[in-house]
Amino acid sequence: AQTVTQSQPEMSVQEAETVTLSCTYDTSENNYYLFWYKQPPSRQMILVIRQEAYKQQNATENRFSVNFQKAAKSFSLKISDSQLGDTAMYFCAFVRTGANSKLTFGKGITLSVRP
Amino acid sequence: DVKVTQSSRYLVKRTGEKVFLECVQDMDHENMFWYRQDPGLGLRLIYFSYDVKMKEKGDIPEGYSVSREKKERFSLILESASTNQTSMYLCASSLYRERGLEQYFGPGTRLTVT
Image (cartoon, rainbow over all chains, first blue to last red):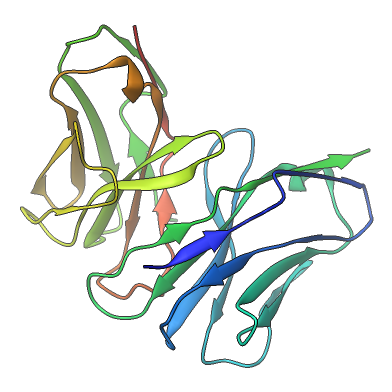
């Protein structure tokens, strides 16, 4: 079974600064995907970024980037130039490729961006 | 844009009542999911469905059932609501069986059972 661990329950960052959210996972699979989802206070969950395990290059989406360390089973999210709208809960998630596989979420981290 | 809607944002029910939570998606997605979200526990999968009339148990199916009679609609049923089912319920959908594809979430239903 896969597990996803987000050990920090809360973080705070000053507007315009950079913050890194940690995530580790445990799996015996070789082919899988990793995700970061964002849930703002309005509660609609949206995808922030996705990483395919077979790709060595770290994914980036504008101000969001990941540091994917496959051997260490680590998948951290870096938010650059933090904005007030980045205030949200962030969930790390894992899914193995193939049929009948399910998304496994971490417990989430609450990020607050201070003005 | 994909839209996933849920029938209610807030719902208050009494212990023992039968509760229906409805989810509708408008993008012809094959896969639909029901999650429960509780503080400190993250999202836990209750049930999911790959196609009409198909359903599979997730990690915490006890006390719940589901129905998928039409492709766009996935219902979560609490046969006899209990106070420990007070929670936020999130519905999601995704395209086909490819697990690498994004799941689209609804706004959630905050259910309180008294």
